[in-house]
Each structure stands twice: as structure tokens, then as C-alpha cells.
Length: 71
Image (cartoon, rainbow, N blue to C red):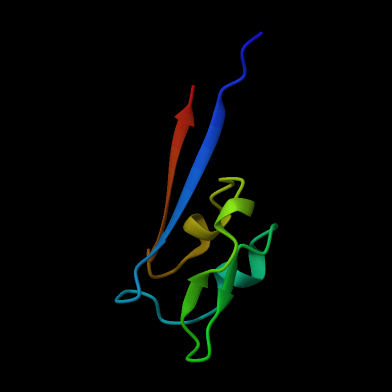
């Protein structure tokens, strides 16, 4: 049995983000945080499990999760 490992890349568009914090509140792995200016930043990218909850809940479409499979 061969398991493919997924790598997730979290992209946050600072131009589109309205700093509502929904993505931060619902991330099960606490990957996202706000910086000193209230902007969303990817604080723990290696913890992302690519559940895409942040991407789905973002009202501004400011988050994109790119998933690649490492073989």
C-alpha cells in the first residue's frame, strides 16, 4: 500500500480580506492568526490539513488552499 502525502499551501489575499476573523475562529488547527494590524497571516503553515473550512467560510473569497500530492 502506497500513501500519497498531501501538502497544503494557504494563500490569503490581503487586498480582498476585510479582517473579519471568521477564518481564524473556525480553523481546527489554528493555522491562521491576525497580526498587530488585524491582517490574517498564515502562522503555522505546516499544521494545515487542507480541510478548506477557511476557504469556504471566507465571505470575501480572500483565502485559497492549494493542495499538491507528493509521491
